[in-house]
Amino acid sequence: MTAKKLLSLILACTFAFTMLTFTGCTKKDDTDIKPADSTSDETGSGNKSDSDAPSAPAENKVKTPEFVNPLTGLECPENMVKNRPVAIMINNIHQALPQEGIAKADIIYEILEEGGITRLMALYLDYASLGETGSIRSSRDYFIDLSDAHDAIYVHCGGSTYAKNVLAARKTNDIDGMFMGNFYRSKERAKTMATEHTLMITGEGIAKNIQTKGYRTTSEASSPLKFETEDKTITGNAASYIEIPFSLALKTKPYALSTLSYDQNTKTYLNGQYDEKHIDGLTGEQLAFKNVITLECEQHVIAGDALGCLAVNFTGSGKGLYATDGAVKEIVWKKASRTEQYTLYEKDGSTELKLNPGKSYIAIVPTGTTVTCK
Image (cartoon, rainbow, N blue to C red; front, side, top):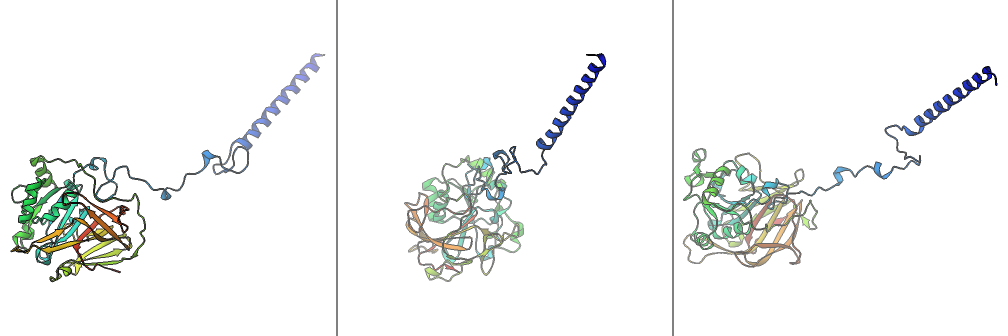
């Protein structure tokens, strides 16, 4: 082979190799580099691989809270889960309105006292953050039963003879404004109210008194209320408006009439009393509750009691109503003794009732009270 032919052969091979390499790179660009929105898999079948499949929309997933407030079933900080709550006796006579600090309550109980009026007991898990709260009034023995059911520290100012006897016998952890500091008389309330309607306290004051007393601050009991992990629709009658005439069944003048009106926007019941909105004077907001519960039990004026104090026999079992999200159904309560927790059941009396997560209003009314739901 001549040198000229050899050179020609080398050049031809070089050209062929170069074209082959160029063609290979072009093919790789066409098949391996896909547009960002491509839905093809490597086989070109048009189906997404498992790794490319999108996750379910976030709104369809129910996130179970890791830490839950035992009084509401709502999410709360980890350091509050085992908090021991406080139960504060709140004045509810018309002359003492508006109350302050009550819109922050996780649960509010309302029960009759003497004279046909009611008193409130407000429970708070995060009591340390409370601003001015009150006005604080005296204890009744049946409220102590409910405070103890939540393993709460009981805040009040004095009490009936029956209440004082119960506190002493049980050695209940209580904070009494008659004997302890950090309570004060509101000068602003004193401008328009009698002195007995002016006693207040703050969360800081409560915390200081608990420290002074050396009370346990970690709860050792579960709440008597049980909750769903998310809202569930209940089967029952319509309950966009609820009316509770507390004292009518005792044949006394019905001074106490509570109303709950369902707000579709917030999915809560807005509380009213004395023919007006029930307002927190500290914030100006109307009291609102996810759950409304009425429980019937035998109540009567104690024979021979000069002040007309009531006996509220919240033991044994009885009927009740549970309303949430604009519907209401019948329920049953059971309580073995005054010192034990109560339990709520479905109408069958055996299936434990679970509430929707949120704040609760609980009225304990005399047997025979006609609660209107419509």
